[in-house]
Length: 66
Image 1 (tube, rainbow, N blue to C red):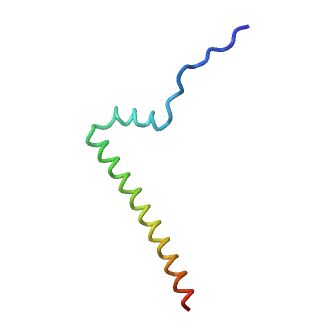
Image 2: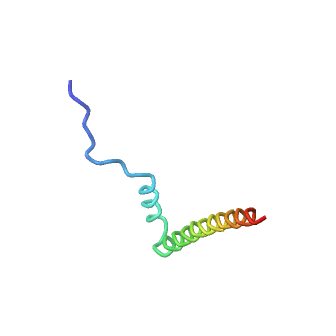
Image 3: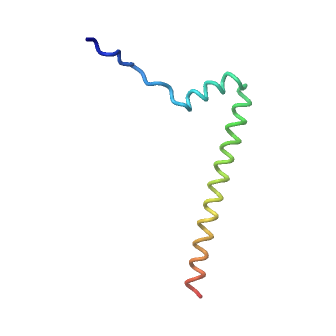
């Protein structure tokens, strides 16, 4: 009885597959614009999280002074 052949390389990740499809469908400028837009969304989320944390700290300080 022979063992099944072992693959020498891993299957591409979903991210890799999506980027390959993206490169086929979008021009370079469109890809850059989409990535820039997504990075802006992530930065907005980070700033919103920071604002919430700062608000909690300020509320905690105000509660201690009361």
